Length: 99
Image 1 (cartoon, rainbow, N blue to C red):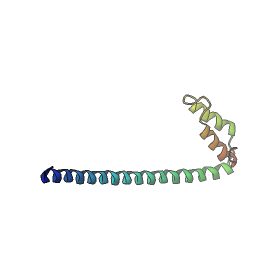
Image 2 (cartoon, rainbow, N blue to C red; image 1 turned 120 degrees about the vertical axis):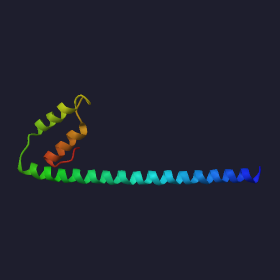
Image 3 (cartoon, rainbow, N blue to C red; image 1 turned 90 degrees about the horizontal axis):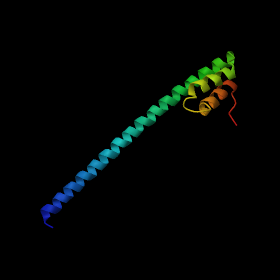
Image 4 (cartoon, helix red, strand yellow; image 1 turned 180 degrees about the vertical axis):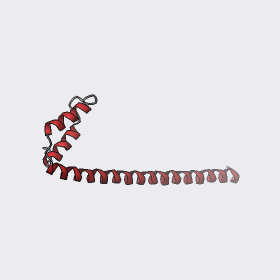
């Protein structure tokens, strides 16, 4: 192979290496933003859960009505309602973990 061809191949490989590094940096930035967004959502949910738990401690709520409400609104997606939502509602109303 001629030196010109080798230099051209080397240039293409260098460009490819730069492009791969750029893709990696972009992916890392996007992943970091996603983790920050998930952290924000978690903080909001935890704060809302704390407020709701404090309100529920002062104001009784019928557990059956809550379960029926969840089942009614999720039955089109799932025969038994949303098991996670039901478990969380039970936990918020009773303070006891399922199981």
